[in-house]
Image 1: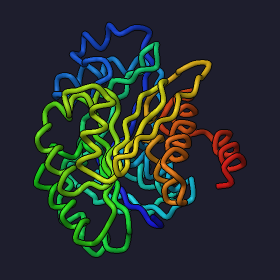
Image 2: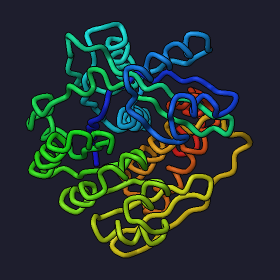
Image 3: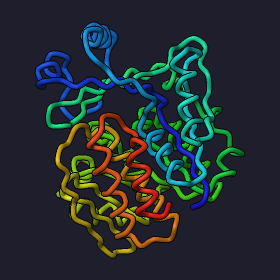
Length: 325
């Protein structure tokens, strides 16, 4: 793996800490889930946000992973769609600042999408997404010649809302000889698209990432058995276990690493995205699977001690020193 390209929803993250989970109940948002909000929900959320301190940054699951992989040292690009507005321009600039080649389509009539992230007192995050221009992405935004210039594709599971788009992209990537990596993204997305996920993982995906809830929802079993099932569908299956660590299976061989204790969990936003970046970077350097899991764990443990889905410069300095990046 030398060059990686990601495809996902280009969303501006708006992060807000909440003192308790009552606001989630009031907004009809199950804790820990990702929900596509209705216009009325969005209006209620906007009204609530107007009186809150928020953090705003470019995000989206695949984009978070790609930005982190770029900072780790791999050549990286990102395909998505934004609006012709200030947020879209800020999104473009944020990718450039992290060394990512932006391949962003521009939707003139629809604004850039947003992901409001409610951060509970225990650090758990709940997403309320308004896809905006991101939902306008089409296969014309993913020409074969672009995919052929990269050897690895990273795609987020959120995109399965448009099944023909996802399957066509995966077909193109497979035809181009790319290694295909997918993160399942959210347990409720998996629940609504279980059969489709099984199909595309079996037919196209080489490396799949899932957390405990997603793997259980997909396979209807416990994480250990889920990992076995996923490992029968693709080359490498990884299940992230949060504070308990992570496990993986490759060619029938099981690997696991323990979790890393942290003093305080401030925000779990981007933990899985950052884990995937660390895992894939180590894999690109020829490291064994256990080392890949370990670097993923280290990076995820770091990100949850900060607000937002991207590591601060102090963390990058330490990572580069300790891992000779």
